[in-house]
Amino acid sequence: MPALARNPFRGLVSLLYPAACAVCATAIEPGAQLCTRCVDDAPRLRAPFCERCSQPFAGAITDSFTCANCHDRVLHFDAAVSAYRSRGVIREVMHDFKYHGFLHLRKPLASWLGEALDDPRLAGRRFDCIIPVPLHPARERERGFNQAEILAKLLGHQVHLPVRSLLQRIRYTTTQTQFDRQERIQNLAGAFRLRRGGVVRDLRVLLVDDVLTTGSTLSECAEVLKKAGAVSVHAATVARG
Image (cartoon, rainbow, N blue to C red):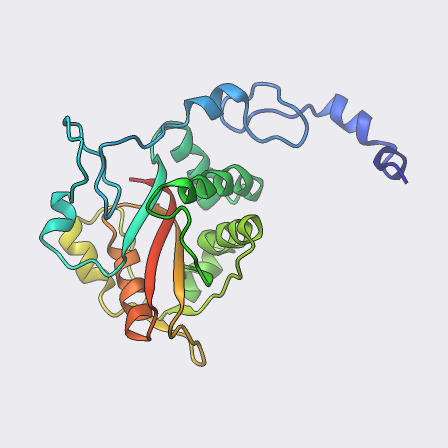
């Protein structure tokens, strides 16, 4: 049966409540969340950038390099990749999704996340599963959802990979946003563990989160996974802070 026959009021609803861009409120096609202009304004992450954590660099570097953020510390992920900067449209959409509960914005965010897989550091790699970065249960109750898990499931559907929530956040930590790099590392020490019965031995893991700032969260998670026997842990995020 045609869709319109199942929902005879669909045309009337569209007329009375036309779809609007979530950022600029411009009229858009039903089913879309953003207008073409806002999509085009999303700030791409462009080379040169750090091969480990994707931190962009303003200089004229043509060879691969490791930034100061990575050079003097141990990072347990093999590489963390983002296709976009956490600026402008990207930041606004992510903020509304994460803190205001605008769950319909998961679709453009998952699309941006998927673009990270086109990066040469991830493209063509074989992954056995996707693991989302967990929230502490108390934080998840406050928010009502885990943004990383929602995005990981959409990405898993796109690339036909199983999503396994095998990590557990066992220590409630204060928000990372106001901390510098060293404070973030200290704040997250011992905050994660593998769930009881979770098995990652010999697996190639794609770790997923919404945003990468210093890489401390991803590194802590990757350390747990590698100590449990994961062969490799690469990370993909929607954006690089």
